[in-house]
Amino acid sequence: MPFVPQSLPWPGNRAFLMVHGIGDASAGKAGSFPDDALRSILGADAATTAIYRLNYDFINDWLSTKLNFAAGVSAMKTALSAEMGGTATDAMIAEYAGDVLWPILSMDLRFAVRDAFIAQLQQIERDRARAADARGDNALDYSVSILAHSLGCFHTYEVLTAVAMQPEHELQPASDLVKYDSVILMASPVQLIRTIGGAIAGLIPDIGSVATLSQPLAIPAEQRRGRNVRCTKKFVSVTGTHDPVGGHLLGQQLPWGYMKVPAQKSIIVPQTGLNLTSAEATAQALAAAFAPGGPTANDPHSWTAYIAGQEPLLRTGVVA
Image 1 (cartoon, rainbow, N blue to C red):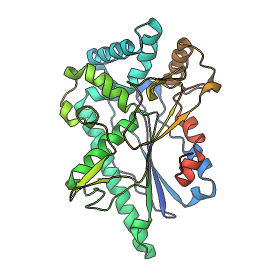
Image 2: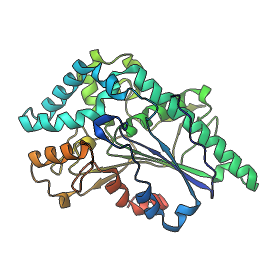
Image 3: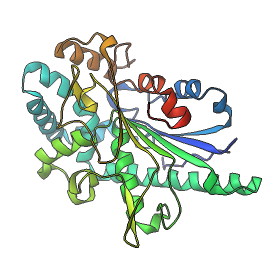
Image 4: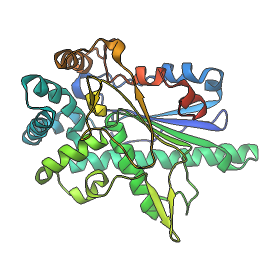
């Protein structure tokens, strides 16, 4: 079925767009969003905040699409395992972490998500303008924050780079005055995709259209009269010390896997309480989390857990 962007009334002057990590058809996920966790963090402000959700339900053949790229998925997981060290346990971790990365192999899927994402951003701008007009306010005083998780971070980075550079979408930060209050990427695989995608570049169609792979990493921005105008006031990376998708394993940062965009605000969440004291335990936790019924209590990649631990950031925008 065709994608229809979500339209919401704004009860106040703030909105969030939550961008899901992987489609609900993949890895047995139910495709649910941790709305309750976000509302709990916002407290009384939740009643005056519009919360949008972007999922990939409209791509009905998500799993069959993945099967069409079996050779590429296998090559990706092999490259990921080799970066980690190449042991049997590394291969187990790569098996599940690779399930987050594989959509870069499908140009059609990438552009389907991209087009839907852009349509949703455009709808949010219409809703923002409508709410401000109805109250006689300035729409620039109404803020939008983007909160993405896992693969959703990759799509967010790609889309914001595109709309900042391409005037036809009417979402540029300088020319169209569309500037987000914050872009918060939780467990971002952008650097992971950059490293592994580079290793299997020959398998990625139209690689020049993938900003993550074809350009230096930077906060998405518009070049306007010699100035670099960023798309957001705050660009924040949040990841855990034991989350391989976010570039960490057993408390150690993996430089080839951790997203470190210049000028980003970085939050590293201690995850020692998850009792992941070995690579084997990490692999088992990821296996359980990606299985039907996941995530689990000790999931290092849990979006709900990331949100629950970021009250100052989500309530006030302050990086604690």
